[in-house]
Amino acid sequence: MADESNTGQVAATIATDGEGKAPTAKKQRTARGPRAAAEPVQATSKASAAKRRRYSEEERNDKLKLIETQVVGGSTLKDAIKSAGISEQTYYQWKGAAKPAEQKLTKSTKPGPAGDELADLVQLEEENQRLRKRLAEKLRAENAELRKRLGLK
Image (cartoon, rainbow, N blue to C red):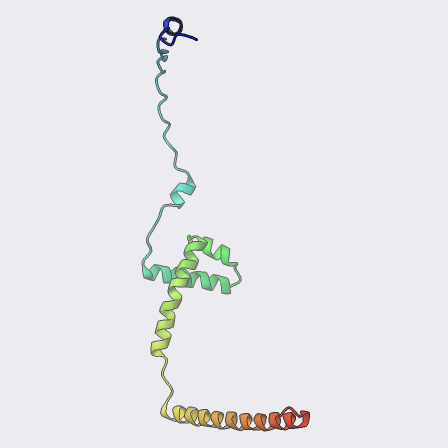
């Protein structure tokens, strides 16, 4: 049997492996050249046109009216929007925001039914109820007659 206390070969193997791997020096990086100066970005016509501008409520309404008159005059919607100097997205946002305001105004200024109209409306509702009841009775009677004929009841 082998002697477990015999570590001579193992120690010699470890020592030879350790000697074979000598520490290596780190690679030196070469110095970078001077950076090129950043070229100034030239403003294009698109960049200046894309600059945000806030329009007052009056200006918005004026532009919307201008576009509407141009469209009625025979121009296409896209051309009218371009001539107004706004994007299609802006046009539709303004138009959507203007609609609820117009609806509020028309609802508040629209007069309710007058006394005479209200009385007529009530009379029509009563007549409608009477006719519905008559129709329901007629259908029940017809349904009962058909059941008798078929012998279901």
